[in-house]
Image (cartoon, rainbow, N blue to C red; front, side):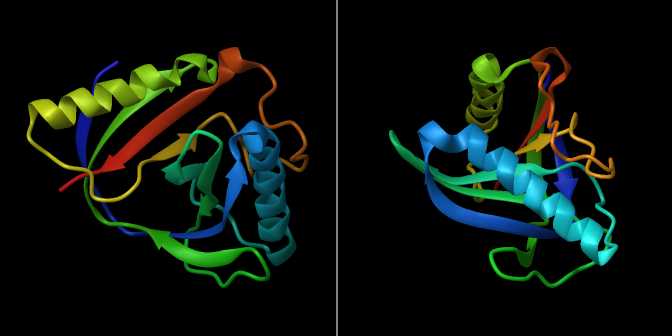
Amino acid sequence: MTVELVQLTAQSVVSMRSTIPIARLGDIMGERIGALSRFLRERGVRPAGPPYVRYHTFGDTETDMECGVPLTEPADGEGEIVGGELPAGPAVTTWHLGSHDRLGEAYGRIEKWRTDNGREPAGPAWEVYHWIDLTAPDDTDLGSDPSTWRVQLVQPIT
């Protein structure tokens, strides 16, 4: 897998963010993607792409995690769901295929590229989950077969 330098444009999103226990990460991520999917369906808003998770901090026992969905145009949130945007600017991106037990290798490729090219992070990275279809009528199966998982990592850089 290669690392690619890209230029991001600002992307409108709706998201949910809070600090959660790492032990509950998978469950909470699934709950939030389901809640965001229902929110969009109830308002007739179409996603501009698959959901993402952005880790603002990642400690030994908890993480400040944002789970969101890109939108075709800005939208207001409600309650725990807020409107916002992913940043514009240069970024590096790479892919991971399969279960998350080797996702660290993709982060390692990005880190190596940054080091080799003298670039610094410009904010937290995010993971885009390309196997999840938010336009499907049933949001209860968020990809139970890890062999189908396709994750794009995006790291904004200076």
